[in-house]
Image (cartoon, rainbow, N blue to C red; front, top):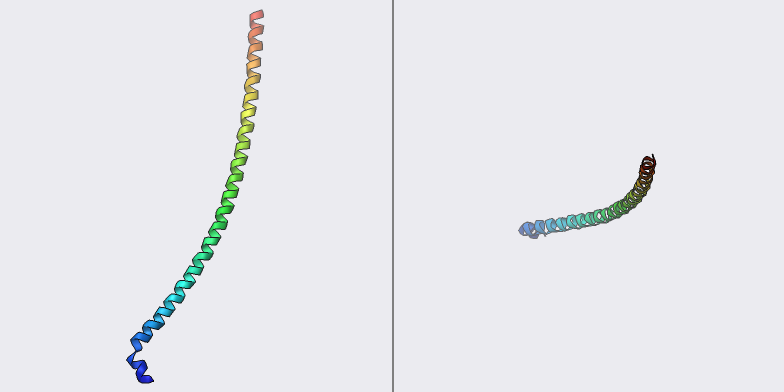
Length: 89
């Protein structure tokens, strides 16, 4: 039995090395799979928060636009009233 080990020690060492390498690759693959799943969750959270931020920004811009439109309408009416009063004098 010992003679067989001495005769084939290189083959046995290669086989053991191959098995260890395959186990490490499987562990690395599983680790990568977990990381990919975690990144998908983070991506979804980022996308959701980005969509909410965009909706809030759109609402704010619409509000500013309405306020500006109302302000310009008031300014226009005031100018017309001043011009009308100046024409009457």
